[in-house]
Image (spheres, rainbow, N blue to C red):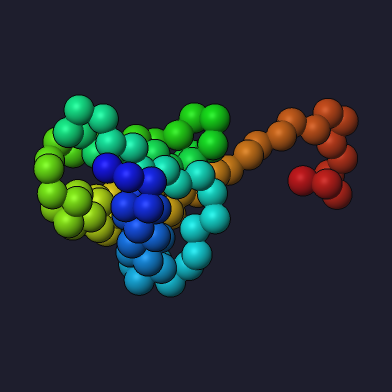
Length: 95
């Protein structure tokens, strides 16, 4: 598969994200094709620790449909992080 076709798939996936989440995704998003297996690599939760979603198929539209359903049902874009920090020597006014 040529580079232009891969770029088209990536753009279709970005469009899916816009339609599902009403937001533009600007992190890592790559589509890879190797040995008949399409893989979507998303920079979630981080670009260095990406999420990969794969499907073995010869049909790029089947891959796009699969990714759309995965994004819809798994809510990858709605991840919440909380952080707790300990602060020593708290006074009654800082609690």
